Length: 321
Image 1 (cartoon, rainbow, N blue to C red):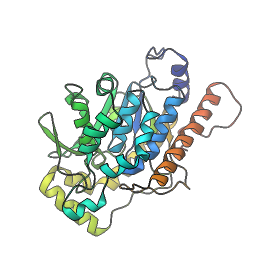
Image 2: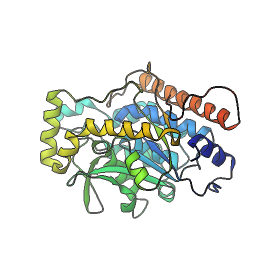
Image 3: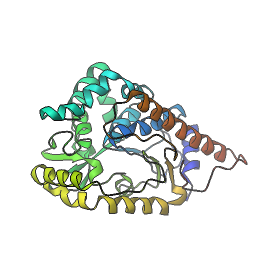
């Protein structure tokens, strides 16, 4: 089967949306992680800068990665870098001090209903018209769920973004959509490659927010106890996915490794700065954006050289940056 680098090169050089490779189905998968999604935001902008905006049959976003996926689908990934380093946006969206008053540490309603409407308008109708697939976790069954089929109109897009990113404890109760309740997509499928492949994807481009050396690990016992208590009360179906999340992450890494040349992963380098889920450090977030953009730019430059027959080494199939 043709490698993903060649498929992307052919699609980039053809007219937008007119793909000659009828047998290939290429999916973009965008990882989240709260503020750590600044990495995938920079990467998405680099893809757009490289002319790959119309090269994907489906764009999957998980948690905060769904925000980046939506902007990319709208053709506005470059503009979407700005909110991540806007003081007003970040302080309005993430406020650890609010927990002292019983409030939400992460205010997603403020982000999608105010910021994305008035300050940095997202064209929800354009997002809906594109191949956008926000992922969330069903609060009652624990199933990883593609919310695409529940989007009846543009007004459902911000609701889906909120559902995809509702972290336990930090972001309030489950979000209702289509008569069902949802919480953060990362609880059941941190990287939506299983869903993408099940839907027929033959090739994947995966934007990661952890370096290759990152090893999934269990949280501190106190954090685990607090999350389990919250899940029992608000999302009982998610208790089992929460228990299996480390095993699921390892399964995902094994699956990606098996895909070989059909997958192109872009990761932050080993020396990339650590970004917490709730960071509002604008200097740090700006650095993460730049690092993510550069990681993708380097990978895509190598991809272009490979497709052009350059003799420069671009790494082994399926390699990551």
